[in-house]
Image 1 (cartoon, rainbow, N blue to C red):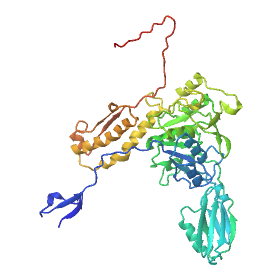
Image 2: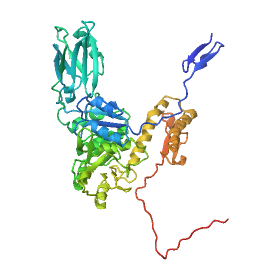
Image 3: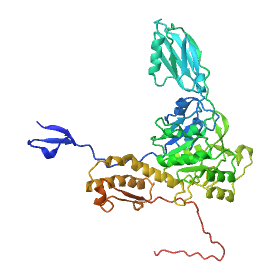
Amino acid sequence: MPVLYQAGDLNTNSLSVPDLYVQIQKPATLALNAVSSGRIGLVGTAAWGPVNTPVIVGSMGDCLAAFGTKQALATYIGTAVNIAILQGASDFRCVRVTDGTDAAATGTLAGVSLTARYTGSAGNAITATLTQNGIIASKYTLTTTHATLGSRSYTGTSWTALAAAIAADTSALVAATVPTTVPDLAAGTATLSGGTDGGTPATAEFIGADDATRTGMYSLRGQGCALGVLAGLTDNTSWTTQGAFGLQEGLYMIACGPAGDTISNAVAMKTAAGLDSYGVKLMFGDWLWWDDDTNGDMLVSPQAFVTGLFGGLSPEQSSLNKQLTGIIGSQKAGLASSGTTQTYSDAELGALFEAGIDVICNPAPGGSYWAVRGGINTSSEDTTNDDTYTRMTNYIAETINAGMGTFVGDVINSTLFGDIRAVLLGPLSNMVSTGILGATTDYAVVCDTSNNPQSRTALGYVRADVQVTYQGINRFFVVNLQGGSSVVISTATSAT
């Protein structure tokens, strides 16, 4: 009787009975999907939400539901998400951090203690209402309501049943603590109070710990982010730590200097920090004015504007000269409504760029609009100090890292070499068709006996050499003009 076998379950070298043997094989994996180049990892503060836990956010609605109403703080997650979305970003992993002094709002309803699910001032606006069923008198409905966080309802005939229903709801706004002597249900309303956000987290809370629990910035490990920002953090002692994390995870970290900084101090801070890495883009501390729809005019860090811009650009694109939206002024230029502006001189820009520091200003090379002026990272190497080097290198490396591990454990032979080349060449070819790479001559993959001699394969080593030429960025556009009455112009006429 023929039997179906999964590939690998049948030893075809030991068959002794003539019969039909059908082996089911999985499709060969000869395609490598590119990773996201626009996902943003954002660490900041909030008035609600889990602490040190990545939360998926794709819109302002998601953000408000997860972290509460926007606050007038440069470190607030919602402000950064709002700014970044306006620049074109749409994919976030947000991590809330606190200084540890935050507290959850509490209240008492019909003898039972209610505690907000998360710490923060947003919990103070939660209202809990217990109502009796108009038909079945023994049934009661508990409704918890918040203008931003939404409403939840639970029905039961006792506080024990209601508390169990709340505990089973992963999106519950409150937790109920029922005393040993369970009180009777009674209609009523309670508004929670006492919730606090605590103070501004220190650098240590933003950076976090890289241990089993992973807190702060390290909560972003394994989240597939291509960009990283610690909202409003300006401590230069953190810059090299951010850079090391960015290189490990394939994140382009966007850092910033303190508000109202001077060029000389910015250069000195970068030098003192020892920052020289293509993994970090450092923005000058000329903070920007933003007209927030909740809190009015706010002075905010340039980080979210740059991060949001990258979130909407493919990896071969530089931030240089790309128009930014939502900016109504800067510390140097002042508010647009004031009617007075101050611009950067070439000497000032040169001093910043030579130090590996970028800036957002107006005008830009393309006209009178706000834009990133340098398009550089903090590396001192001319071949690696452009935005596109960081983003392209991370993009390709992460794409390879996402799918090539399936070959580990395979037999080393010509079939393996061919499969490896095919999988690596696939996404590179796709990058040409999408314009990320310029031409099919801009990449090469070698994986055969020429770079895998038997002396190495016998020890279990397989090597694939991948070379990719990135497209350059037009940074210095020179137009030669020759004019005058004595200029002779030669034109070629075609034969007819």
